[in-house]
View 1 (cartoon, rainbow, N blue to C red):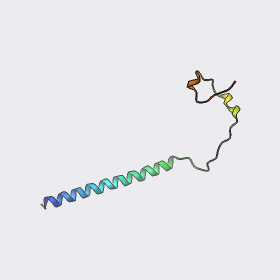
View 2 (cartoon, rainbow, N blue to C red):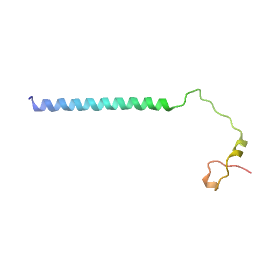
View 3 (cartoon, rainbow, N blue to C red):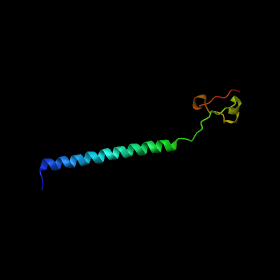
View 4 (tube, one colour):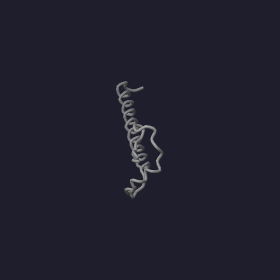
Amino acid sequence: MGIPGKQRRTVWRKVVFVWALAVAVAGGLTLWMQDSTEPRGPYVWERTDPGDAQHLPPCPTPQACAYATTP
């Protein structure tokens, strides 16, 4: 059957190896998925005219809006 201490060590080594492999695969998948969700370049700033806010609907209350329009 084998030496109990040696068998226990072998089981723990396998458990640690499988855990390390799972961590490495999960980390690689995380990095791959994170890169695939980013938009493709080239990155440019978009110019807007301050008068473009005219087409936005009016705010129900000043605290509820993330933008401000001046009359």
